[in-house]
Image (cartoon, rainbow, N blue to C red):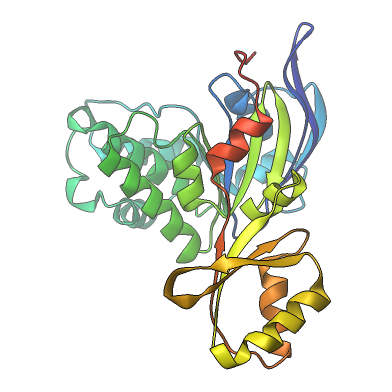
Length: 304
């Protein structure tokens, strides 16, 4: 998904301004921002649920909104259902309305979200976590390649949050989906997403992997490197040649702790291996997402 210059104005007020996003196939992308940052407005504009004031959206290289819909499954805000109907019948209605999803696919998505054994029960008796799962099941109808979820863990207890988090990670790992998920919960994004975009007051403040974001903001990334004692002199030579690498101490299990500035952990690993140095572990110890979030967002209330 490529979003370029996306803006949405309400009169003179910009709810989203000049948004540029890049989501790669296989990403579990966290769209992070405080409440009122404009996340839901941005998602609605990306999906074509509201008109864009400016900008373009490409999904798998296609800008055509009708064709895009067949590639995308979405859950925007809290999902709503007919509480008097079963989960299965709710999905049947959704499949018929959207012309996507066979009876076999309904069975499949109910199984994927762990609701197969509760599919005949009325949705009115479902917990909030089960309703969120059913919302994800509905979004999975039609076998989309991209799943867009707006605050899927909102209002859940810790167990429900873990269940949704593990489900999304499995959809990426096992099913090969690309998942774009918005949240204001820092710890959730940090634990499940490989890439992050931070939105504040309608503008994207930072985007990338944790290591990339910290380095863009002028920080350094700490990495623990497991090496045999005999390989340490050779490793020090590699670090010197790379530049931007400084040994800062000892970590757990005798691992060497290095600080990287302008160098990715993957570059260090590749250079060590090419030099014949045996690497038993390479563990990034990046700063917390909370530190990064607070450094780029405003403490003032949002506008959207």
